[in-house]
Every structure is written in structure tokens, then in C-alpha cells.
Length: 548
Image (cartoon, rainbow, N blue to C red; front, side, top):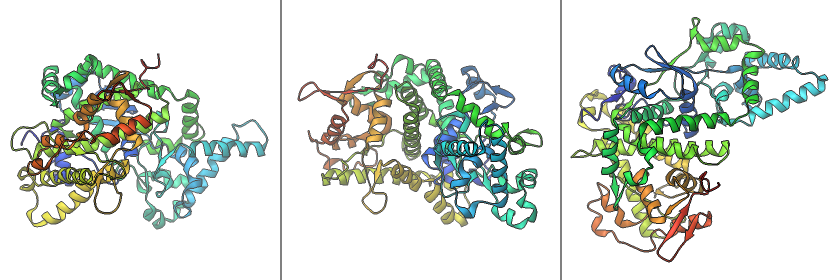
């Protein structure tokens, strides 16, 4: 178990810090947190990717560290530091007008007017037409809003469809503003930026995206022989992972190159004019705000990524493969963002389940001996519905038990265990797992008892794009792919492979109609090709080859 609690990068974890003492942080890394919705997990992941960054003193000039840098990172432990931008001028211009009145401080309104006045001077037209142009421009950027409507304008997030709208978390300190009379002046606020704004509290960009980025780095640095051994040993129903990955996907060097190219293509889909416009609004008409918010004593303001479990490389590799496939699909940029959000959310659930099952195994386990039985949306089959609830509860029980493993529990303050574990369960553990699943629509109902696992059209679309690498595969192979990657199954007898349900396996049955609701969903989506009563194919209509 000592190896289970090993971290990547090594040496970054701080056992003395309050955050790293949290049982869930010790198990899952620093950190997945209930206040960070899936869209902001994706935003943070892309923010790390596109920001200037370095490991120790070595600069990283690409979206991911090079393969040489990844290998060297293992031998010279150091944190990954990056330089995220606040872009307060851009957020103020886009979000102030739609934010709640009580969150609009006097200095915010003053500076927003100054921004509009400065932008007017760069428009060659009549005053009325200038105002109309600015309103259109403001509405354009408001249309890129992502999440955080209940927060102050500066703490809201853009839809992460291009690199120029990716920003760090900025929180307005309203209490400090009420205390200081001079805070009505934007110049005074910016001069004392660190008193009025917080950019390192990690309340909404709570490090989940950083952990996912580290998962991928951790996976790509693995020795090829280690990877090949796992690909061959990871089997379900006679299907091995080695048989379902392409040659390129089994080679970490080629997968690394494909990921770099895929994300580079994704970011290049946005017109350069928009990037130039966002930069002009943020720095072109007034640069002092950007300078003060993005520097600390003249040096670039940096953030340090935390760490992830060293054993997370397996789920990290699966995510890298899935992202590579989604990014190579022939779909538009907004739909890609939608599917990347699903990818991040499902990966968090997978990594929490796998790490928990590794922690609670009596013998060595890769963590993928869990299953989630998928029921139909209407719950027409009461037996399947009940077993779906049972499998979901089993995963939650394993998360609960893993946080209490002796290697973690024995090192905690024994007099405060109840409080420590309540916070861990509610904000970092099983309730986080359920909350993410419910936000996806993978777990229903959102409120009330009888929770179970279902598929939505969006999740099914993601599964097709991420699990069908070519033009088509058989229906049975597609089901095995879902089981290999996410533990999703449709037949009761598949639950015999699920650890913890041994007392229930004598009740399991096999039914030829168990997966009928999946077939119906695929058929309704137009991707199911029936060759005969016993054989069907699942098409990936978004594969580049299929549209050639």
C-alpha cells in the first residue's frame, strides 16, 4: 500500500500541509473538489496546457512536456509551474453588464466606463454607431460565457473554446473593499491588487484540471514494456485492451505526438481575429490592469500544479487515447468542447473508482475490477434498475472504505476523525463522485433515493467518438470497449467480474434482451447497422475515414 500512496511528481507532496493531510487528497491527488463543475475542470486543464510553464528551471515550449522532459522529470522531482492570466479587462467588458447588481462595486463600474470610452476612440463611425458596435461586441463576448452566473463578474468563466479566453480564478474581496474607503478608485484597487483580489484560493478552479494534466504526463512517461504488459493483461469477456488499441495508440511516443497535434488543431480552429480582439480589449486600450494582475513584484505570477497518485498512469493513458480520438473527429469546435467536458467528468469518476478499488484490494489489482450496470432511462426493467443501484452503491462504498485505509487513517488526528472524514466524504469523496455523475446525467435522479446509472444521448455520442477508433466495430466489441474503459456493462452476468458483489452473483441472470435499450439508442442515433439478427455494427460517422 505504500506504493499506492506514492505521488507524481515525487517530492511535491507536503505531508505537513493541511490540504495534503485530507484523506481524499492523499488518495486521489491535489485535488478533485465538489465546488468545481466539469466545465471548469476542462477550463483549468486547457489553461495549464496553453500557459507558459516550466518544471524546475526547464521551460516547456509546447502544450505538453516533450518525451525527454517527461523522462527527465522522473529523475529530477520538481513541481510543474505555470503562468495563468487573469484578463480582468476582458471579463469586466464581457460580464459586468449581466452580473448581479449587488456584486458591481463602484470601482468596477468606473473602470468599465473607462474601457468603453477608450474603445470608442478606436472605432471610425458616428457616436451612435460606436455605441451600437460596442454593445454588439460586448454581447459577442457574453455569448462565450461558460459558468458561474451566481458569482461576481471576475469569478465567472468563459466557454473554453480558444486559448485567448482561458483565465485564472479571480475572486473579489468584497469585505476588504467595504473596509477601505479609497476602494472606489480602480487605480487604487489595482495598486493594491493582492488586497482586493485573490487568485490562488482554488475555490472554483480547484486544481481538478491540474490533476488531469498530471495524469496524462504520468501515463506518457511510462516504460513501453510496462504499458504493453498492462494492455495484454487488461481483458474482459475474451477481449484484451491490446486488441482494441491501434498501434499508434499503444506507442506512448506516437500518442504524445498525436495529442500535441490534436490540441494544436483544436486551438487553431478559432479565427486569429478573435484572439487579437480579446488581447486588444484586455491589454491594448489599458495595460496597467493586466500588468498588475498578472505579475507579482515585477515577476510573472505563477501557480504550481499539485500532484497525482503515481498509480494513476493506467486511467491517464486511457484518457489520452480517448482525447486523441475525440480531437481527430470531424466535428465543430463547440461540439468538441462539449465532448471534452464529458471526457474530463467521466475521467474523474473513473480515476476515483479505480484508485479506491486498488486501495481496498486484498491482492494486487489494477483497480478496474468495478462495474456499473446501465439501466434504461425509464427504468422499465425493475430487476436491472435494482442491480444498477447496487453497483453504484458498491463503488461508493469502496470510495468510503478506501479513505479509511489504515495507511491514511492511522496518521490523522484521532480526536478529530469524525470532522475530518465528514469533510472528506462530502466534498472530496463519494458525494463528489455522485455529484459529477448527476451533472453529466449518467446518474439519476438528481434528487431523491434509488439512484442508478443510465446513458444520455450526449454521453453515448462521446462513447462512440472515443471508443470507435475507425469507421465501425461490432456491437459486442463496442460493449466490451465501454467495459474496459469505464466499467459500464449491460448484462447482469457481467457483474460476476465486479469485486464486492460476490454475495450477489448467484442471483445474476443472462438475458438476450438485457442490452435492447442500448441498441434502441444507437438505432435512433442512426449509427447501428444490422447485418443479421445476431450481428450488428456500430458506426462512427465522425471518423475522418468515414467521411473521406
